[in-house]
Length: 293
Image (cartoon, rainbow, N blue to C red; front, top):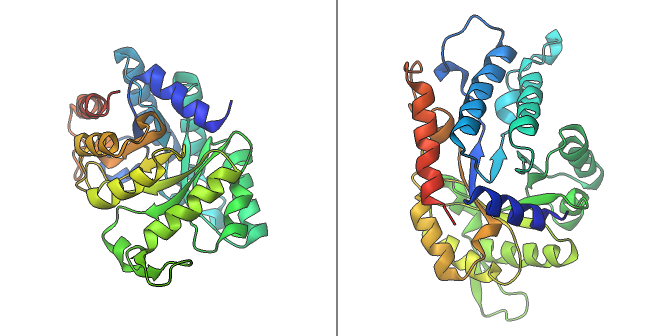
């Protein structure tokens, strides 16, 4: 099954286009005497079990690799974070086998190194898709073009510093009198890469509705998947995103609206309250409702 078909199938089965980020912050998790690996695995296992019981499923999951690898101590032979991620991915296979997993690692290097990073994502972690930086161009990006796998290329991101480079005005390669922002030039390149390999998509943040509308409009008839972070703690609104995608004529079943800390630990700081599981489930229910198809 192609990655495009996987997205359409999971959206139809789940009835929404939510992507649940799985980015643990150990300091805010419930207190426990378990090892770090067991603590993370138990935490997400409890959440997944309750989600299954409640009949709730997002249409994608997105663990950020950095939240797990930072917990490793390779020089001491300790890989608690990576082993916890392995456990969590196994739990996803058990509870949500048809829901795609996007490994958020934002890789991008010269061709051979990109090939190694692609093997890491798809062969080692068995992810369905990966996030990729386009800065080094075609030979850096295309090693991630695995058959039936997806790739989300950074296009217009949700962080405050995104405009430093992504909004720089560039000269059109054909009409040298026309200026447009770099993120639109990147969008054009992503569309061409997508023509060569189905499943190549774009990361476009939910923190600037104008940019999102411009890019979604450009992709509206091109089957370019969108990964849309920035909802929740970064200030983006899923309701607004859904409206913008509709107005742009974009096929919403190919989009995934991501929230991470707003779902996995919505209390943000301090120790987890006694009702932490209810808070997680309520936050997920709310986002699923806002991003329902």
